[in-house]
Length: 418
Length: 142
Image (cartoon, rainbow over all chains, first blue to last red; front, side, top):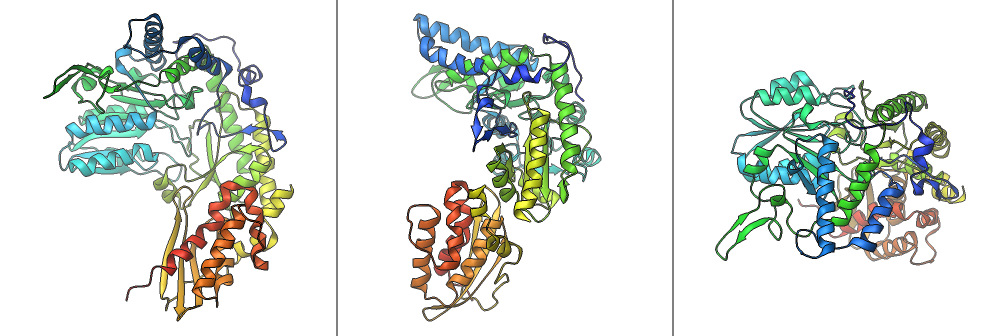
């Protein structure tokens, strides 16, 4: 379990899930005549009223471009944009706001690192180490840059229990290894990887450490300085914020050495017909008009979650996912994937003789939203010998009653499809 | 609920459990693969076309109950048909499951009409049909 610090203020000692649910308007809706049971928060989390209102307020009273105008609206927008950057730095415990680049999401952040950092440092024969449990967005960008540079992508295997094989990781590490890019928590089986120790091991051979935090940031207290990673990527929309906005944390010296990723307005120092010079980070990596309303919405989301008592949240979510695992496992013919010790609020499972899509359709008719498919992690599906799984994922607003609805739904699935 | 019973009729579940013509066709003249990258469903279709007639058809692969049953029943529906009839049946089937037409399907295929109520599952029902159509254009190289 991640260490709990008292960096953020919190109220109360236990998690008041009913109070949290009241903040999310969508949870009041019905699906196919039944109350929505939303168990797909790992795909995208629902949004609290504070986020929806902030975006609406911005467009209603504050819309303007940032870093461009001398007029009042532009100045206000710029101030808010930079305020959210500082908030994001505090959320990830970065040392300064300048270490935070706004991106379109985790995928964009990882592509940025792969192409800009990877593209400029990788040489033929160099190695990029990923893991077998990566989301495609922390695998395919590395394959693309490997093709371009002559580098090689290698993978840390996953054990039957769903953990990374750390002995094999140690064996794979060596002087050729320039980048280690691993997920903090699996989007399929929820396994939390021992990222602090892995970062230290990778640094011992001089590798740069890239952490995909899309699934950890909503569930664990992330501290990029404690992890000591070189890059950390996460998405706003999984953090109760809007889609189209994500964060890339990077160590200043690395960001400073990186060439621009995309060219355009806002990322330059001086442009001449023959050549241009570029702004320092983070602006260097934010070409064009950024997603300003999304940044404003993310700011509201960060303020909302940073007011939570995270010790209570983590305890609640851990208790809920453990209880859910136990109850789901009791469904006849059900196989749980990767029963590792620690996991975030994600469960993946297969029902014997029943394809996940058919099960997902039956659950949908009961108002239960789960994900069915390969979850953009085909190598992990292959590892466990299944074409696809059902995935139930929880968030701060998920209740035990919803878990019970899922279990009842799975029994119904067996009845309909038997 | 009614829509669900309509989708998972016993004949579909039966074809899912025991798909017909579920084998490789050794003397196939035509072959194609159908793949849905979003869900990982994957089927291979083999046809034996003699003159203008599809004299034999078989398939292998994996997918959900809808896609597998659809592939199984598609093989039964086009076996013995001419190439032109198979193409026409593809159009008919496609129109019905996408809900753009209410025309009558050959009796056995009628069970797929319920798919129209689940737009996200249309691709499952049509995957093997697209593969069959593609196979008609791809002869097996010697």
